Image (cartoon, rainbow, N blue to C red; front, top):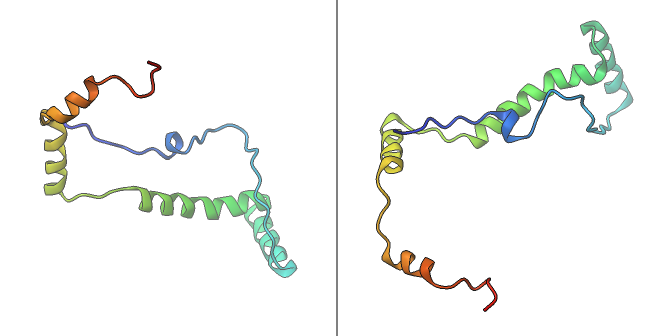
Length: 106
């Protein structure tokens, strides 16, 4: 039976709920920093949290959109059928795999 393949960001990118320790340095004009700082204050969060709350969802969406393959129902059925089908007989490959390895010392 065909296995439903699900990509979970946390496992793919090694994300965890551990304390954040990686840094991003950001250069911006002083007046822009003032606006961001004021917006963060109004939102009741620090600047880092304010930026992450707005940037990270977009970053996740962009990564998902560019790492997910979407198939029509017809193409998905064909894909699953190929996965479920018995392997093709490839005598040349079988012969190659029975030859001594080039990486083993003679």
